[in-house]
Length: 253
Image (cartoon, rainbow, N blue to C red; front, side):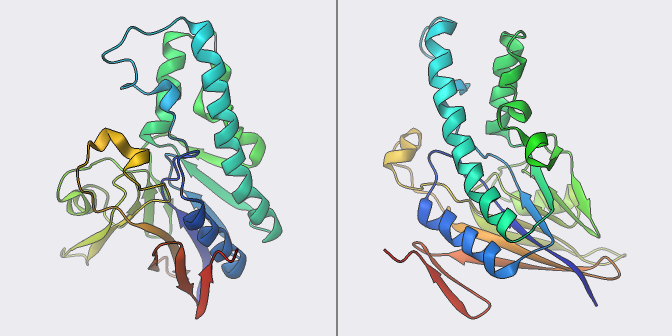
């Protein structure tokens, strides 16, 4: 017997998201009408507070930085609003946010300026007011026999590493779609890397300096059974198109 379902979205990196991939995710929520919604984090790119932005440059005064940060916070909240609007329409009550490493850059910024507590990720995106359950970076959310985090490893065999440490797990962070299963005496455990929803173009990722990547757009749909076991469905999104429950999903202009 099926007890509940969830739609899970990986790294969006607003405002550097791929709108066609986001539109697919929104339509999947509309069709699925899940009981639970899980955002795996890296909701924002947060370039304005990036640890790398001022690594080789002198950091400007705070009064110069704040308007840029405010603009990015507004853009990220606009992105979250897209999902909340559809979640409200689909009457999805249970919502979770798993804090990502990019999201944590806001917290690092506040550590330098502790009087700016409103700029912490949890407050800047109004997660509590939005009705989300907040999960600090890589503190697992557990539902049945499956856990969710943003992602703790980005090594070559990251799915294997996550499965070894966390057991059954769905995570983001690495932007690729892969999985790895490990056999144990008490049964098989598996970790799924769920890809991303960001703009994957070279122009929006110039920090790669032309390197080839293996990133993919995807969304997850989870079904739980009465005993806590589950089924993970990874829904690949290819150039703004996908198929869910026999229905072709794409942006019609």
